[in-house]
Image (cartoon, rainbow, N blue to C red; front, side, top):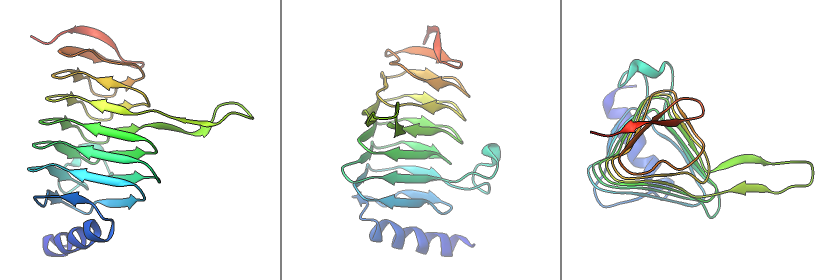
Length: 178
């Protein structure tokens, strides 16, 4: 598809999916949305979706889903590449955040734990100035503090304090940001 077709598709898609924004985001490539809740975008957001705009992730694109009652809120000056955001509850991404190619951010396990259990969903909060390396996975209930760094390929299962670098599977403290 050409840039004109992507631009037209994205404008229609954001409108049909009731995405809230003041300034239309810088969307490069088609973003796939299923908004049954609420998606709110801050100003000056850049989104890459597809190999043409960020080839690191292979054949990935942005897929964002909110279920009824779910919220995705993204702060201003944030850049996101080929990332899956899936919210039953709430995913809140701060200002000046960079999210690398192929990341997955899920606020739920998508299924009950045990035979008679209920599905659990807990809010994810990503603070201001955070950097999340390519191919990382952020799981339900996690808070990542301001100016934190998540190394590429990490699986974040618990809170990361502000100003710290974490990496690995599961992600562990590496050192303070200097």
